[in-house]
Image (tube, rainbow, N blue to C red; front, side, top):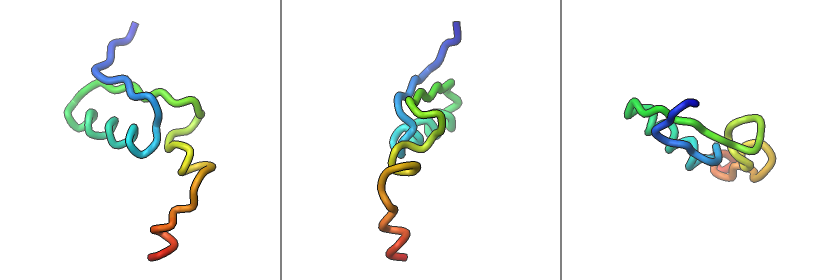
Length: 55
């Protein structure tokens, strides 16, 4: 059985940021998401990034 310092549920913006920070601190991290790709709903099927459109 594998052991992790952090198990992060969801790979959206907050989950991704948490995983990156934990990794920078040399922690062993597992990210679990119901989808087969990382990034969360807004990246793949959700919202249009309005900030990008404004720039």
